[in-house]
Image 1 (cartoon, rainbow, N blue to C red):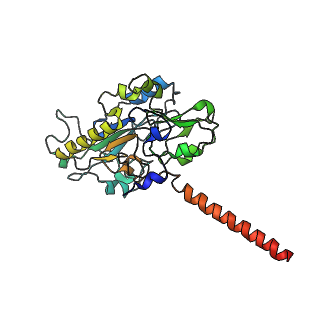
Image 2 (tube, rainbow, N blue to C red):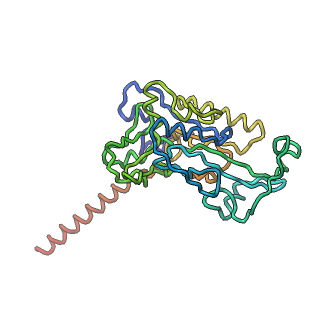
Image 3 (cartoon, helix red, strand yellow):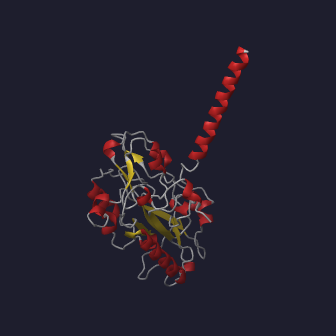
Length: 321
């Protein structure tokens, strides 16, 4: 069966973009099960790429004080707090079925949670994981997905966005005119405009480092190897093995997100291992490249224009006779 995405995007990004003898497609695999929320990736990204600091923005709702991916935050370490009740771990239905406080996966009516006095043992060792009553923290370092079918490339009028020989998507800020089309085109809401100049900015997957054979700054700085960098095919194999390991260890909710080449964006160059539903992390459950229907739309618009032209000619011819 042919790939349904082949009509609206490349299947092998770099060769389809015109690169001959392109190197293997490179990408990120982010294993959220070992993320400790240290934000070393955020700092390393800012330092290497000269991304302006965002100020001390205390959001007052979480230890996550970055809030989201922005023009000044190309990596965002999200903290998702999920309360647990005795004998019952918060499920996606529990979280998503209740009012949510400021975008966090925490029901508003949960109220203050007493986490108990510090003990000498890790939480749950004495009672078992089923009887834990504390919070579960899900942590995830989010980033641009470097889609196979990148709508931002389709809509950019200046060529500011381009596909690299590594299959990644990069913004050339020096020729960005600030139109903002790429922002609305991104199905993940990744791209953002910088307020002081209006241009678009996002992760480049450290394109300058890749050309020198170096690891991207965020992956280099990650102390737990939650962020892994390498050839995308190798990362997918590694990720599948990691999911199988977690399932064997009694973590059935472990799943991959953005790894499937047959999904609505042709697979992501930066994909994730999640421990809950994508919506809990603020990710769309079934992303689709926003320019998918453009060929049909233009075809229908062209037919409508021809019909109007024919009707106009017929009216003039009929009136003259």
